[in-house]
Image (cartoon, rainbow, N blue to C red; front, side, top):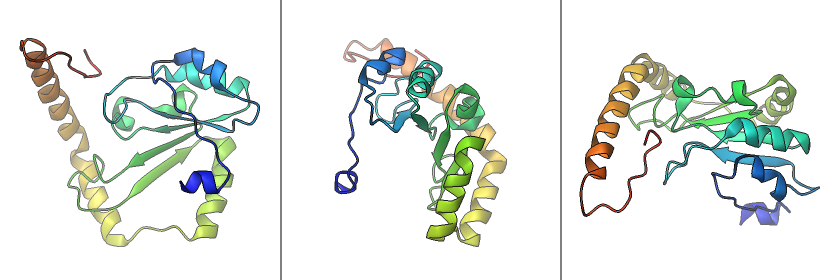
Length: 170
C-alpha cells in the first residue's frame, strides 16, 4: 500500500475498544484514526476515551465524521484533533461534487495549513457553489434520513429472517 511505502504502519482495532486502545498504542504511534459511526457496521466509538488514551501517549486523534456530520457530532469538542468529512455525501447532498472538508484544533491547524499551501490544494468554484447550495437543506435532509432509517431498522428487527440490525440508535 502507499502507506507502507511511506514507512507508515497500520494496525486495525475493534471500534468498540474505547479506553482499551491504550494497550495498542506503541512508542512510535503518531496518530489514532477513528470513524464513528463506522461506514459499514455503524459502531459508535467512545471518542472521548480514545482521545484521552491517545493524548496520554502524545498521539494525534483524527476522525472521519462523514456519517455523523457536524450537525450530530462535533469531534473537536470531544478531544479529536483533526476531523475530516466527505462533503460529497451530506454537505453537498446530491453526489455531484468531489469535495472533502478538514477541521482541526489550534495545535494541529498550522501544520495542516502549511501542507495545503505547499500542495496547492484548492476546490473549484462550481463544487463550492453546489456544496453551499446543499448546506441550505442539509439539516432537513438529515432529519428525514434519520427518521426513515430508524423506522426501517426497527421494522427489520421484527423480521424473523433478519439475524441482526446494525444501526447507531438501536
